[in-house]
Image 1 (cartoon, rainbow, N blue to C red):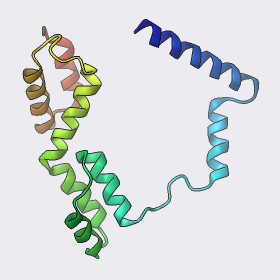
Image 2 (image 1 turned 180 degrees about the horizontal axis):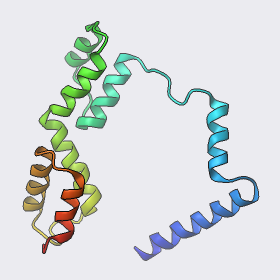
Image 3 (image 1 turned 120 degrees about the horizontal axis):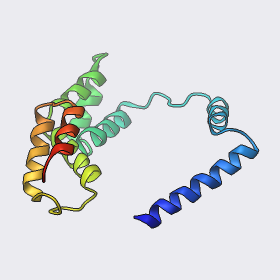
Length: 143
């Protein structure tokens, strides 16, 4: 852990020195954005569905889902699919798994049993509890 922190500090110091000599980081980013034009172009329906499915439920869409989405001609189909995915139990499971990895750093059973932790976190996601309340409970826990 200490070694990782030292490496990060060295990288940041090197980057800071590079940009201090030439230009500030935000200026370099702004320059790149203006040179490349549009940051994100509108993607095709097939690309959109694949990306949003991977982001929200952690899985690519099935062939039937892709066909149905492409054949759908309603103008708000992208908003509808996002809402459908957000409302799905797979989204809750994916978000729980993501939070588990972020918060526990794959160190199961160190402070609380993995099953108890995972069930508690899943319940918080399912109930749509605000993030500040979840974090407050985690910080106050005896574990």
